[in-house]
Length: 141
Image (cartoon, rainbow, N blue to C red):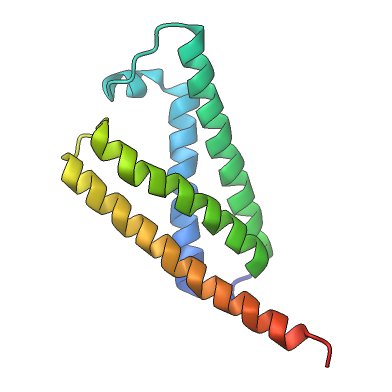
């Protein structure tokens, strides 16, 4: 599947890691409310559950889209998934240290998210260059 793909192997591996993170987060939001409580998230009724399940649904939708893109190896579709991930994780880079819910110190949390977003941006640039080259090569003369 990856042998004939124009997408570099490291970008595929990055997407697989992101898929695993999103799937785990989606699972935890759907089925492990104790984890959320332990992280300091309060669940006091239907409005809180609505937000939790909406977040889980969005995470799993991104997971499904990412799995589809991983399967198709289409560079244009990769750009969309990476674009969404950059914004999702970019927001977490700023929000998580301000409102920490992880067991890591806010600066460590910021650093980890910063590295993830930097890798996503780098992957986006690489895939964007691939799509530009493919578009140039496929342009009628």
